[in-house]
Structures are given as structure tokens and as C-alpha cells.
Image (cartoon, rainbow, N blue to C red; front, side, top):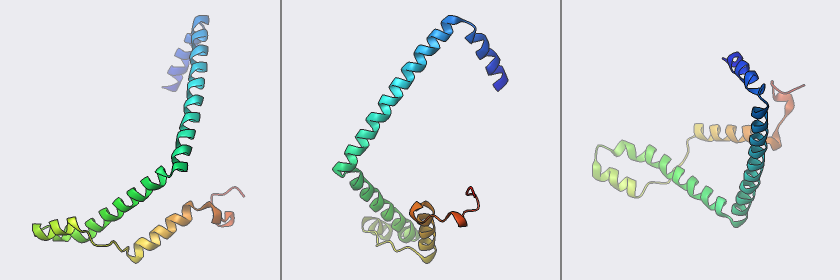
Length: 126
């Protein structure tokens, strides 16, 4: 399939007008993408400086904790609708199990590059 694409692309590039149009479009694409990346960087930098992203992170973390609490403590009460509804209105505090704590610690260690030891990494360039 790639060879078919290349053959059609070679035929297309034999036309000097196609090269001209391709050059204009590629330059336009680069200009637009660079501008979009710069604007995106400054927008997220401004949101970080204003504390909006931290507030969003706190809100999402609280919602995730409430969701885990409801899944663990309220789902077994689904046979009694009044007890289930009371549990949904006031979900108990979520406490992770030992397995979850070990998993979270392992994931945090995995993405923490400050404690990266290249000798323990079997895929690192030696």
C-alpha cells in the first residue's frame, strides 16, 4: 500500500505546479502549527500561574476518590434502595487497601525520573 502511495506521489510531483502548491501548503502548515503550539504553551502557563490547573486537579482527585468510595462501599447496598441512596448522598471516606497502596507506590516510582537508576533498567542504553 505504501508503494502505491509512493508511485502516485512521484507522478504528482512531476508537475511543477503541484510542487509550488505543496510548498505553499507546507509553509502555511508550519506557520500555523508553530503559532498554535506557542499560544497553547502560554495559555497553559497562564492557567498554571493562576492556579486554575491545580484547582482542577484537586477537584478531579476528589471526584475520583468519591467514585472509588461509592464503588467499594455503596454498590453492595444496591439491593436496599434507601440504604444505597443514603450511601450515595454521603459516601464514606475512601481508604485504599494494601494492594492499592503498593500499586500506587510502584506507579509513582515508575514515573519519578528523579530516582531513576539506569543500572536497574534492562532496556537502557549501556
